[in-house]
Picture: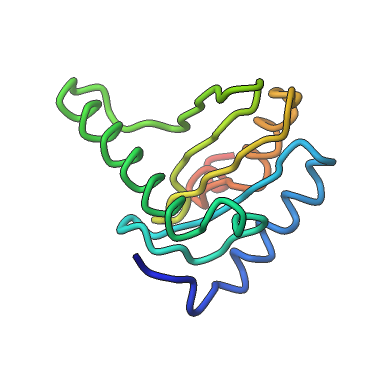
Length: 128
């Protein structure tokens, strides 16, 4: 698996800001290419950014394929409840895949609001 060799400064700063503004709700954040190559990460060292990047890429691909077969379009956000009331959020952003792992018992409304604010696609901004 690929290592983070040239992190994206823009994405790295974005992830750091989201972690900071989340006030402890978000613990781990990673951005990877669709092939699983990590391009930015915060606190993912304990999980293994290479492993996590490959795993979220696989999850994203499987969900997209299932939805394509069902003819219902693509997903906006995947949310998985983990053991201990932690959550994994996976979504697409500017051609990359972002994953966030929350701490225990997060305020899900607040986390969703942060994702909506910080990970807007440019087309969405123009529509407003």
